[in-house]
Image (cartoon, rainbow, N blue to C red; front, side, top):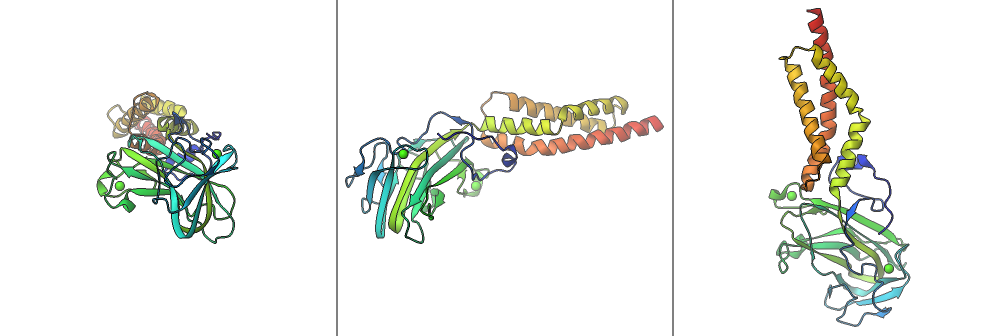
Length: 310
Ligand SMILES: [Ca+2]
Ligand SMILES: [Ca+2]
């Protein structure tokens, strides 16, 4: 996998997040795509009806041409897959079914380019969701697949694409976005396609990793608390509580907010496995809670002044 760059915690405040840089994410386990870099198996045309090692099927029943060729995307080894499609034909690769956990997060990525010439590209990188090993998520297949990106590599240079996949936050509304994992998905299948096109395209360095979302969220939450100097805010709240009437409304609210913060920090520190959407909820709540704690600190100071004056 490519090197991990420093995490931009601010990007994580809003979910789902669109990533435009290299994967800069803590991941769990290995690449779930076998031979995503096409280094296994011989260089040369892939015989009709066959696919490179690790892949499951030719996507359109063999009416295009697949080949393993020398060269590849930057840092992605010595070989890549070439897809040649003429006269509006289609070709491509389906991966095997990969079992997934719809409560966690994944990142799918890959490199693509086309031979210069065509004004557009027919290359698509995506996935199809399955409810069981034999049933796609939707009977109408166009509703069960999504793309990392489509019309890839139009400028003739290798280009890198990636997409962070997060659980559908609204599983009951009957639809999911391109970067959401449907709640009832148990498997996915990678698609690397050359769809209805007249040109030559290439894929390399295809990857799918489970993302350690807990590590991401934990880093984000504690960075925000540190940035707000939350310990200082809590000290001032303690001082304010000492000077405020015990039964005042503002004192009650301050104690509730402090308790909520302590609970949020315990969850963030804890090792319990949680649904990614619960982590995202805590990430969203963190800046709100900081703002409310900062506000109640001033209200307590005013309350204390009123007490002293009264
Ligand atoms: Ca390669
Ligand atoms: Ca939804």
